[in-house]
Amino acid sequence: MTRLRKEYNEKIAPRLSKELKRSNILAVPHLKKIVLNVGLSKSLQDKKYVDVAVATLTRITGQKPVLTKAKKSISNFKIREGMVVGAMVTLRRDRMYDFLDKLVHVALPRMRDFHGLDPKKGFDDNGNYSLGFREHIVFPEIRSDEIESVHGLEIAIATTAKNKQETRALLDGFGFPFKKEK
Image (tube, rainbow, N blue to C red):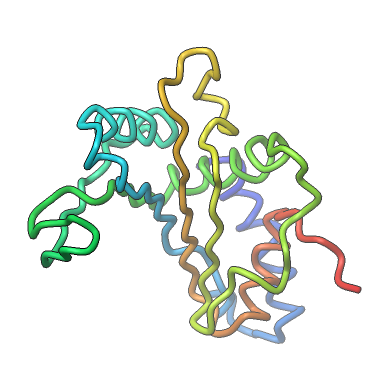
């Protein structure tokens, strides 16, 4: 069991149970999965861009990404049906908790001009949270001297929370660095 999962079971879940007034510990919100996604729009000009993005996601997550393909043709974007338009990785269980630990304690503090996450953005009404990175080089597995091209990265965190407030309380428990609301 990972350090963060153990901390959730022993500290975060009991505290959330009291805070959200849930008598059953299984009714307390928890993480379902984390999905990392890279859009490959530059792959139209450079075919090696797909390989670079796949290698990046593999190094960051330790899991091989799945290539996503266009479902239909869009002539304005020069996309044909079946073309590779993205790469994604879905993390669950221990790998999810390991990645979340690395995200909160290593990657977010390494961002340039980082003053905290905006607490009003990124939440949806179904208990999910999304954030994006302009550069993937904030992760410790990526060394800046060996990258060929810089690309963005989207992260979606799916939880069992029922609304934004429960999701925020869960992520606060995991130590997400949200800005103080004024």
